[in-house]
Amino acid sequence: MKNFKMALVVLLMAAFTGVANAAVGYIDYAKVIDNYDYAKQVTKEVDAKGLEMQEFLVDKEKEYKSLDTPLKKQTFEEKTAQEFKAKQKAYADLKAKREQEVYTKIREAAKAVMVEQKLDAIMDVRGVFVGGVDITDNVIAKLKGAKK
Image (cartoon, rainbow, N blue to C red):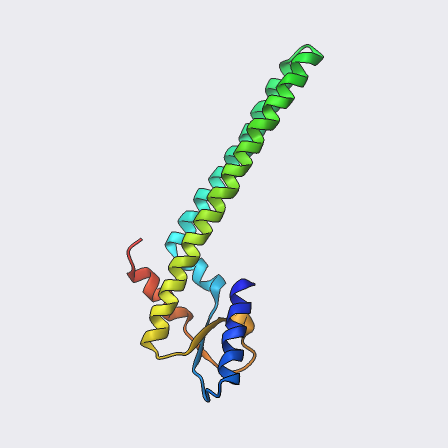
């Protein structure tokens, strides 16, 4: 949504500053993600961390059931809640960091294509009603040629 708003602002600025016939490109971000190996790798890594959290909860549930006194159970619950909260934070931090890395790489590739094709702006396909130049495949090709 942030990208869409930024692209809309760029287009409005171009319209109000008297720039005529601005060349606008657009990309299908979802298609880029689906065809970008690094994005797939990041998704697998994040999903694996999510699975680790689920396994952690299953293991802790088994341990909880083996406890015999209410005091042991209460202490265990408190300790487990703290551990899980730390794991949730680590997961959220990892996910945000990796998603930002993917976004940055895609944005850099899109900028390079924008320069090559002498475009004034690039938008997400969802923000284009009519016109523009689809550069999705060019961005994918640029990403596939780039080092990870």
